[in-house]
Length: 498
Image (cartoon, rainbow, N blue to C red; front, side, top):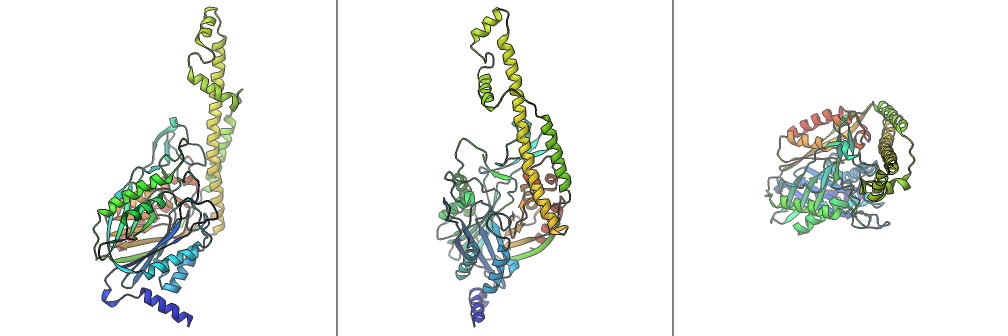
């Protein structure tokens, strides 16, 4: 009897009406998934958009979390569990369930799984016929590429985990993607119903209170929803932000605050959404394929290279008479008065008139000691960068060794909603990968979402993966460089089918 009731509910909620078989229907739902056992600045949500076109039903879910498994509180069985429940209760095919993590570093509550399923149930209960339209916006004030191109041909990156390389070593930075991919859904009377926006930025700015936060994209979604009105829901799908930081990420002179950046992003999305004309002819198609990608086999060699460089740097350290307590006042003193740092000018002039150079010799000694001390500081900074990335390589070598097979299976999803086309990947795609896919795509409104249907850490370009320096994107990675070509070929094939 219970099984019959469940099937009846699914039929009631999802069975297409024969008279409206060509009409796209949509429903939205959301649930608060904030962990409130810690200080909270703003809420985290699981949001769902359920779409139905004839016999095809798809659920697009976004969660304000760092990842779908592996990192943070969401467990590795989350995706499979949610899909199983949605198939059982609502007859939604698992291959048509897409779950994207915003990649904010907020903390979700313990019952995040139950609440996510509830958001989809709610979406199924409020299905209405909708018109759709695709478009794009632009926002170039909230993000920057964190890859630094160095004079020696290597690359470094900007993280809170270690110091930035000295300015004089930097010759350039990597690219960024200011495009906001947009899908607008309106009710039949023209009132806004929902919006999807896709953008590449790490939502890791935090807020001055340091409370639990959905970060930049949480504020952006709120701005979009406030501007659209009529209860419209904004659904963020994270893009290719593997090497994209919030702008001025390392600012130490002002409290880091995600809200102004989120407002900029949200308002730019609204400008783009308002230019979109929605239509009734919005078809729905989903393609979900599994792609085996080669696991890295060069981690041992790269670990040896780091350890060799660490040994060289340790040997380069030289003792100096100074310590931190004596270095700082000397550094200020010698940069404040470069000609007469140790005393007033008249003392130097007196010594000169007497044929003495005691202060000049002291200055030379102090300057030599300061130069040695600064070299040691830069060496220690380089050692911290190497150690952090060595630890990542060690972790992922163990994961690859424990996997027991040379490949890693990932889901690649292609989704078309009217003119809006999306392809997904479970890793942290770097921005060049997304830019290349969009440039080559046959459809004009094609966008890319990482952090979807699982999590496999970073996926840098093949060139970045071979970086002779060491950056997080290159070391926090399970994949061999050949992954990129295989992925791009798969995406091209899926886009042709869509």
